[in-house]
Image (spheres, rainbow, N blue to C red):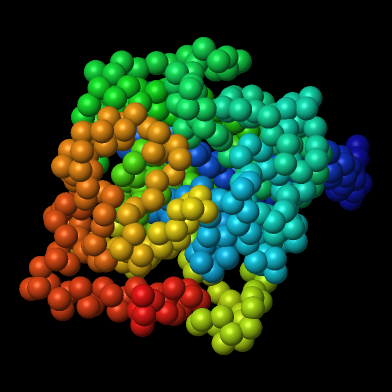
Length: 505
């Protein structure tokens, strides 16, 4: 018969052996299986709030809808500028684009660049112990500021390649498949995956029969989902015309392709056993690629989709009315990762609002702690800053918006409103433009859309489509002054050189 002491010793030996075996296996498992916090930031291109989870009964977006059912859906999430590169610089720094210096497009021939001594989200996460990878649309510069360890391409579906390689076109399913190697890498560090689609951006090919990517072009692995023109829902900012409906049907099709890529990526996370340990953020860089939304600071351009699924929360399927902006994305992700920001950032000496040329904090803040709250306190105001899109499109606008009012300051209001090349060519716009300045375009006329007043003040609580400009009524001068002061204070706090335009034109 075995003595008690001997039995205890035997039991301890077995436990030690099991522990050692577990540690050996631990070293060979993906990081998230070890309880590490992985992060996926999924950014679509020019996707407005067109999804089933946002109340559209026509479009098919089952994967976005499921993500919302498992996470938090924001109804009041706002881009700070409805321009691709500039917005992405905000997403990846937590700073407004006038604070990063990336005022417009980075690609040829526009060549905008962020300040070289900034540190972006992927760099901060990498220094904090994360491996970082990006796939799809990169569209920021310089690389030294927005650097990733791994740039995922179509080469062998996932091998590391030189900076800038993509070649996925609009196939988000192929993009997701290419991420498998990165997700499953035998690396003890947690991962940050920045997944950026080219859909549902308009095509730059003016002769293309479908400006949002024709399904006949071939999308391997993508199930074709098409829509009838008579079924689409025309938003209030667009004219309800044949041309508009045709383009909306194409746009819906493109959004459904994005949704399939999201679904495939989530399945890869599940197959790797890391889904339950991964923060997933679905968002768009800004609103949809139609005149009246993209490049404007009207709500269709700024109010964008944001769905966040955080591991370990008690409440799911939350819809929150918290007002957040894209300056909040980087602080939120760093908060989740437990990585401190390396402040201060150093810019040129004497920047407005930064006498020593430093940035001591983000322009945004973390919303991680309010993901289970439907109406959290203190998230009631956002700001926007737009200066360029393409380089010929100088039209600086500064905006403050709360739950009651919104003020747009059109700083170069004497100029006609400039058009992005793809929006100018849009048949939705051209059909109305050819009818003349008095032709209706959504809630405005063509002429009103092109020539705007210096200040646009809207009672957004009662006038959600921004039709009645209160700034034109002398009785509202005190209210106008209150919101003007808010914009000026915002500019001073965030180093905006356009604050000087309060003094001269």
